[in-house]
Image (cartoon, rainbow, N blue to C red; front, side):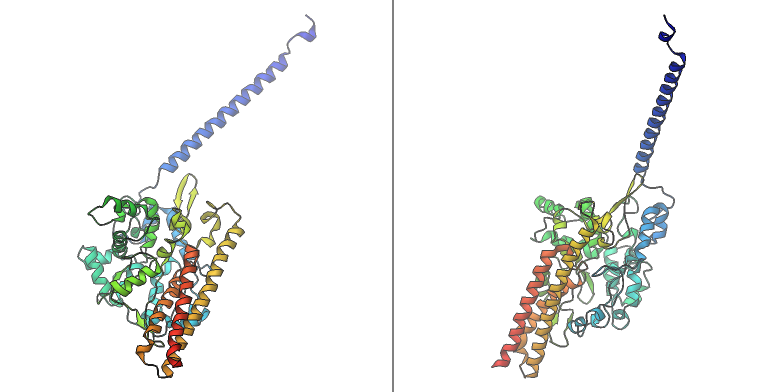
Length: 466
């Protein structure tokens, strides 16, 4: 054998060494990967570490935050002051931005002070500061949504939440205010033992039972449809019947709703016994509530209704609700920190958080999504302004008719139409999405408002022509 044909001991050593290094690298990489997967899996399964015990009386979110630091960190950010084109959490003066509102609410506290709501962190202090409280008599009913009020209900009711709810609602607000110390917090939406979502507000619990017992169409709430088919003798209980996805809207719907203070006891009542649409709620006020009115308009003399903030009701008529998208999916979207998936408790407009709130489902650039949303809001705003002007024209016609000596009997129809038209205008104006929660429904309601206002204008002018 020649020298050239002999195996090279040097080449074999290098092959052996390279093979050994590659094998070691692959083994190390695979081991690291498996350890990382195991670590992430363990992290994802380990939901929280109990450092402090919380119970039904733990209303301070800082204490809950010791067990849930990620959620608490985002909750604290609700102090942010942020503005969208048509809202946000900046407390701008809506009366200054839209002087028509002073005339529309003539004779009612909203004509004195009407500011945009700030974030959840301010919901109790904003209630303390508004002129609607300092200059007008208010009741403890306000605390149903502005505070972490359940311990106060139990205290006032000697352990009975419902009885305490009734007592606190009827109290003068300064007296009731002494019973609470914090805005809505963790315990209002989470069971302190299991951390599961739950509904706690007596007003919502009764309202959703009334809705379930009605014949209203609610395909976006499958648990109610299922409960109806079962013909259960027990009242509908969301804490027992609702799916988790439904609960991600119900916990918001506890407060982001239309309501009124019923009877001498000022009991917080959700007018859902006929359904969630604007005209169904109006029918409830006209018939079931005996023609309830929030105030008598000082210019037209009409018995008026004031919408609160019917986000839950309008959302129920929109495409997101019909598609199974909850309030929390957009306003408290899921985020990942490592392998841990949590709901972002920085509750705010999705338009301030497009990437997490919208792009999970809508695969468009942020600018495109924002442009589409603002186009809906701009169009709704345009319709709203036309509807407000139509109602103003109706009020002017009634005033002029009175100046011509037209008696009240002949103006009754015009006043009735003023109530109906302004109710629809305010239903969209008081709702905090500027129509985005249900764009076509908002347009329908405002179109009806314009039509009713013009009918009322004709009804007021007609007697002056004779």
